[in-house]
Image (cartoon, rainbow, N blue to C red):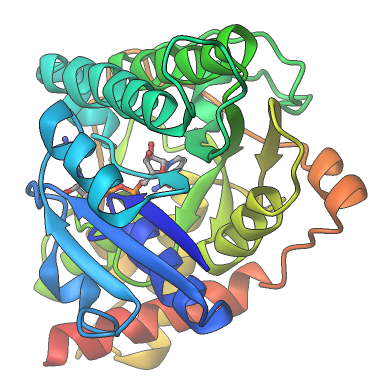
Length: 335
Ligand SMILES: NC(=O)c1ccc[n+]([C@@H]2O[C@H](COP(=O)([O-])OP(=O)(O)OC[C@H]3O[C@@H](n4cnc5c(N)ncnc54)[C@H](O)[C@@H]3O)[C@@H](O)[C@H]2O)c1
């Protein structure tokens, strides 16, 4: 039996991960700590809220006393850490909460885990638990027209969001090197799929299309992201979590590079097919708006390490995945 603390399990990726993990590992007990900020939704947990192996705890990863209590009461032996402030735009106008949640929160979690997992605190024995940190490819900065981010790419974060995630990655790294904590880090590209907050690109395009509002596209629309289906991401996390390759970092990417304007066109075409407007195309609603400050031009991930050493392969074809995702949102908005 594993007693796993999952943080951020009411958010987009965390909730998809809990659904996936509960189904795949019926002998694991999951403790889901989430503050339910504006980004966390109880409806995201509908599938599993009453599952016998799932316990929801509303609380803050910065609350040390609460973390100690959770570790003690439930004998937590692993952490999979998703909780974060995750939206770049918010980090540009309100960076403070990103520093608090993403850096201080990760530090608090690491420190409580480390002390709980040492048989005798401060004797520098190897702590026994696993700490898996979920991070982003944005820590590597921006690419030119060519090249891919590998695990060796130097960190060069450009937004307060990516700087806070880079800092949290460094703290995780330091707890492995200094204290021997069994850490794992995964850096993934842009996820898409069900349950994503409407502030993010794909849900925004869908929502604005259906409301008949302008679909905002930053700058010239030519910024490139590498899209990864959330289920493929969950499979990657699963492999890394069980890999025992402590201290290692793995990149997870979908190998699906599209410009933002291409994404808008693809989503609008699928919507034109699934629920046509009385006149014209949803593409007519696309409107270019002033670019995001410091907008990174291109992200693209090389997942060779994960593929060759742990046998991961994305299973979703992008066009199939995006169609299914749109169908999911259409169903959600109808109910
Ligand atoms: N979505 C992506 O495309 C993407 C890409 C790369 C990396 N990531 C990383 O994956 C993780 C999950 O991302 P997401 O898209 O699911 O984010 P999300 O914003 O949908 O969910 C974040 C969750 O964390 C919770 N939370 C926030 N602050 C908290 C706190 N102080 N204590 C406890 N819970 C708190 C929120 O309530 C929410 O449920 C994040 O660490 C993010 O940096 C996401």
